[in-house]
Length: 200
Image (cartoon, rainbow, N blue to C red; front, side, top):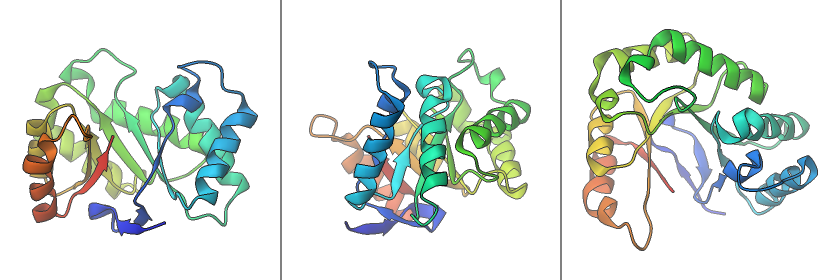
């Protein structure tokens, strides 16, 4: 499996990651055993990057990844989680106090003191241009609660706004055969700014 440095995280990860929404069983029944088998199969194939969120199964996906990680301490897994979708989607809910509560919950779920990477989970557009948001995220990094932060976006404009901030390590964006605009607009800026791209 090829590896690359994931933007400003400065960490090498597999170029193919595993999205783990399905492990939360939001899309149908997934037993604990089946979920752990999926994670094991991914690692056996060379995957070292897992993407999850605090809303996937209301934390179940995080907890299963935490369990797998605890049982496989020798495997260099990087886990990117997301926060912000457990409340009403208004900019006023994106505060340092809430960020602390959300990351504390994810740290418990994943069984770690420090989260590898936390992404804002497709927040309201105004959030991407708020100085207070990035100050709050920087505070979490300074406190050692998170290793780095990024954003999960809906639009190229949101991605470009987030990438202009020095602390943004990664941008997760829809990129596939039908959604190709990021190739022309977002990826060149990501290269210039040293920001990692997580293609979903």
